[in-house]
Length: 151
Ligand SMILES: NC(=O)c1ccc[n+]([C@@H]2O[C@H](COP(=O)([O-])OP(=O)(O)OC[C@H]3O[C@@H](n4cnc5c(N)ncnc54)[C@H](OP(=O)(O)O)[C@@H]3O)[C@@H](O)[C@H]2O)c1
Image 1 (cartoon, rainbow, N blue to C red):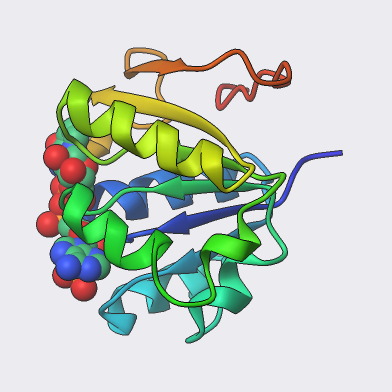
Image 2 (image 1 turned 180 degrees about the vertical axis):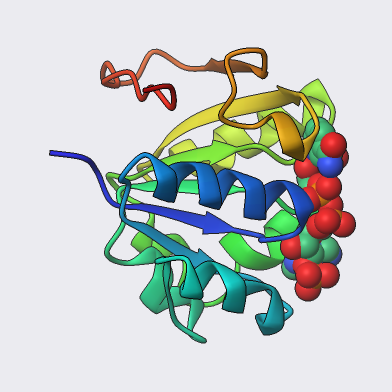
């Protein structure tokens, strides 16, 4: 069974990730600071809520793709969110430095969640295509079933 995913941040890159997940049959919840950017994704089949907790709670994989790690912190460290993370996997796709990635991994691990940090080596138009490379790094954690976005 495909797992429930949420994507926090539906800017240019986040929206492309969401559309790719939807196109491949993943049940995808979305949240964005500026609500209007969620609307076309909801029309395309994404689920959403104004309440960030309601978006994160039912999912097991949380993709984060916002401007920077400071913006990511305002979401993941918001009141009521850290206690929801245990048992989930956070996939941090926001651009940042190795130091920020290590700090994020330590903090997310302390909440009882698994952490992957990804670097997107593509522009939004290429997401979901075989020539889009995403580099991931993270701790051992339990093995994740590979998620292919190619048919
Ligand atoms: N575009 C690319 O080609 C590309 C390639 C590789 C990596 N990336 C990385 O992907 C990430 C997103 O890039 P993008 O191109 O999608 O940028 P974008 O279109 O400017 O989107 C930025 C996103 O960050 C959100 N955001 C900014 N400040 C925030 C805050 N303080 N609190 C909550 N949300 C905040 C924005 O929300 P609002 O809509 O409310 O402003 C929006 O969802 C960046 O880290 C970027 O470096 C992008």
